[in-house]
Length: 271
Ligand code: ATP
Image (tube, rainbow, N blue to C red; front, side, top):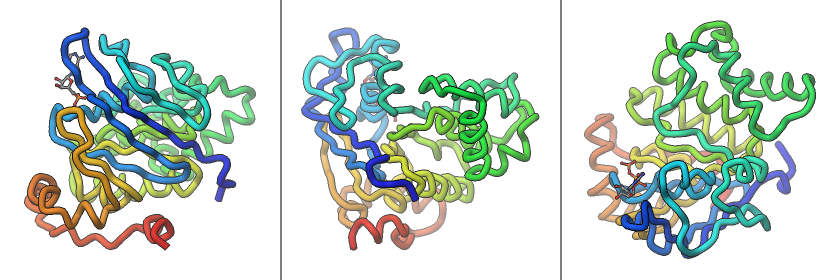
């Protein structure tokens, strides 16, 4: 296990974001991701979840959005809307829709992720790749396969592996379970937990509340660009609103009630 100082913390204070000066997508969001934790962000379509991740990864301008008030910081470093600065500070995003380079092999996709933190030297690049292969063995097995030929779940793993090549301190995940079968969703949840245990703080945006609450230490619910609820996974899972709006849907989807035991990392957090 890595020493605690390796973990990155993310502090978002009173953040306002607008697109094209017209649509106010975030209206005063404050959210803390303490170093070494997993924080989940839930919310319906259009609530502002992706906007929050774009703000943290410095990619708002690419979507014609901008921070109009408030701040984001990693540790003591204030982040501006600059993707390169965010990556240098150790904030790396796995985009929604598991975008991989379909015509490139698994290995080539991973190499694309090395660009992130300006990693120096072949030995350290090999070390990063071996760590990814140890965490996600399917990528080692398929290293010479074209990414476009992999299943949706495997492509998601590749997208995560590529982000890990940049050696993040804070990993931003945008709906990693989207469109995956329940068994693969559970697998992705276990991988998120393992990444966290190996030294990376995680901000996890999810519509699958059952999965998110089973791995997170703390969770936020966004509604119309504001934080509507905040609490431990147990508190949110017990809230009528969350049960009705999010967990009900998850139960229907999987046929399973939301009775997943707390993750090991969660027990540590509450101990
Ligand atoms: P989803 O789960 O559907 O991705 P979300 O919670 O991630 O939703 P956002 O994509 O952050 O929500 O959108 C928040 C608000 O900002 C919505 O009203 C959306 O229509 C608007 N929005 C998002 N991207 C843009 C954009 N590039 N230009 C204009 N408005 C946008």
